[in-house]
Image (cartoon, rainbow, N blue to C red; front, top):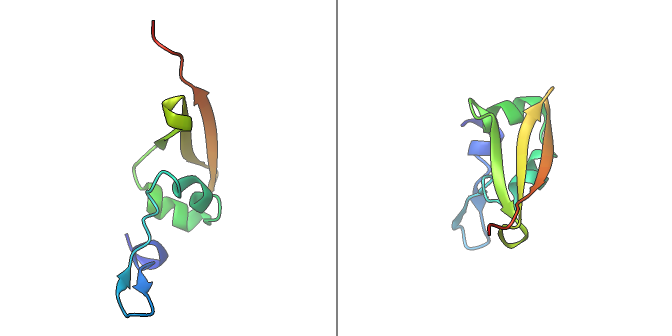
Length: 81
């Protein structure tokens, strides 16, 4: 990765390096929704969709890029017998 996403690390007040983990499940969807098409292409690359576990494993959110914007689909998981 290059540009904004790769260099999103900065320095905190103690001059320690900070890294932005865009791939963190708690951050990916809100972050992807703010990205432009070029940034999304950089994040997704050849990946068709990211799957994020939500609500203590009862739901999966599929995040994908469509027409230059991030879209998401929620899928409830059924409980096994």
